[in-house]
Length: 238
View 1 (cartoon, rainbow, N blue to C red):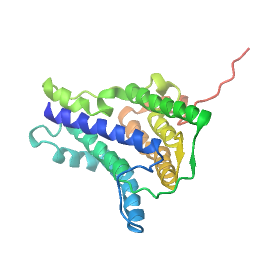
View 2 (view 1 turned 120 degrees about the horizontal axis):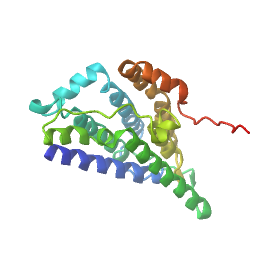
View 3 (view 1 turned 180 degrees about the horizontal axis):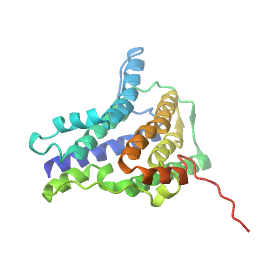
């Protein structure tokens, strides 16, 4: 239970840090390194998230996860351990970023109101997509809840409902939308948005390879029927 509490506490802190930091275009984060060290530190902060996040989902990564969690329950708690690591990564990225001090554009008046709505909608879509994929896995709850019930973790089935009926990668698309619907634009936000958007477009390819191995023909049929990232625009037949 304590492990689960720690997981969700760090998870909540990471989400709050993300929402707040990007709302201000990464201009209010806590890092204070001088140039050029700030550029190097920021680059490392950006790179560490997609690289480790993807690596830990590999076969070798799963072995590492089991070694990182509590020894007696490492297998059961692997999803919780993964969520803790991902949350720490995000917290480091968004809290310890060193701002450039340059603000290119800041929304005002009606533009500010509209962009704030878009930003909120993007986050709502991300929450919805995470729920459709299996909130217990995305939040890390699956591991510790299974341990509390003394049962083996049972992963949700291949997601095909909700937003997954429209596109195959709604979580990545929604996350990308949060990067671009911010009311303050800085060089920092642009660097973050371009890098993580590239990750959101490329990383799911690895995920789909895992799904193809796990679900076989069922995933192949889903892959053919549902577009990757953009909903299909179908004309209604008269």
